[in-house]
Length: 373
Ligand code: NAD
Ligand code: ZN
Ligand code: ZN
Image 1: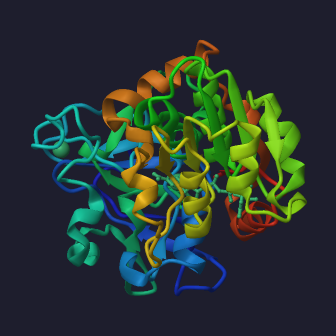
Image 2: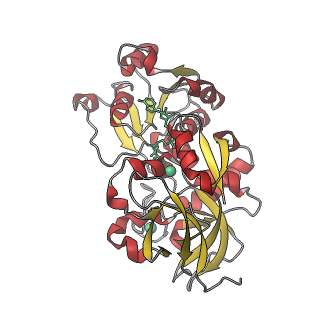
């Protein structure tokens, strides 16, 4: 390609500092180095984790940065040593790597990889291929999909079907895969079980979809936004509960509804109090509760006795999927109509309107906004 080996100037939404609106800037994207791939981002979803890092989270991810980790695109060029990708390939960047060789990749107990971007947070600047106005711009999670072009490491990229619609399957780069996998891989929801899902954004709705796929017979969807009720039922929820409709704690309501607690619960709101409610809503003797919501600046707590008697509290990162090998299969599952994706997309906007996409999410008006480049 004409751009191979050259710096590409393109548009990106830059987060200069925490708690400030993103601004559209022209950035320079350097050519990929060894074992890196430069891609043209075609579309990207806007996930709550992007919002969280900007407005609520710790500063350790670094600013200025380009956010975005739910994208899909086309390979523009490859760095030395890259064998699995070639220009023109359709790809999804991955915020969880899968090098396939490390101790973690070789274990079937985890989807973590020692080469995860965040393992090496001290070298954020040297790993970035972005500059703007003479400054290095950090690549959030190594993906930075709020940019027309980005550079990712080959261990954090996967090739998908040539016929996949990139403006849809980008959502499999995070939210849908996360919630769906949290129910199937992490909670290991069983046929005939009763489940509760707290928080019905894309992640929670995908968890509802996962509970249904696993054969749960009752799925109680919980959200403080009453407008999420009909969407939850479309994804397979059998009941909808709004905690605001009750004076007593929501875990007591669920205990009564289920005569002793649900078998599985999933927290997809990103709130430490809700995490505790989700745990305490499960059956004391064997309930399994999975934390999916992202919080890195607060502690979570419960009474030890609530675990001693038999409950299990777990967390799920990217739904437990080993990323490189699983995402192309999830794309195929979508194309074979085995999992929903289109139904999550409520808004499509240009990159320039990224701040509007955050507003739509935070005010509960959207499930997912897809930004098209
Ligand atoms: P979202 O903002 O679209 O949805 C969150 C939902 O939670 C909203 O419907 C909101 O009304 C609801 N909610 C808020 N407070 C609540 C409460 N007290 N009780 C019940 N419901 C409540 O977010 P999303 O993009 O679906 O992401 C959900 C969470 O998952 C976020 O915390 C995000 O950072 C996290 N996440 C984690 C991973 C992971 O790998 N673990 C990956 C992606 C996202
Ligand atoms: Zn995400
Ligand atoms: Zn690895």
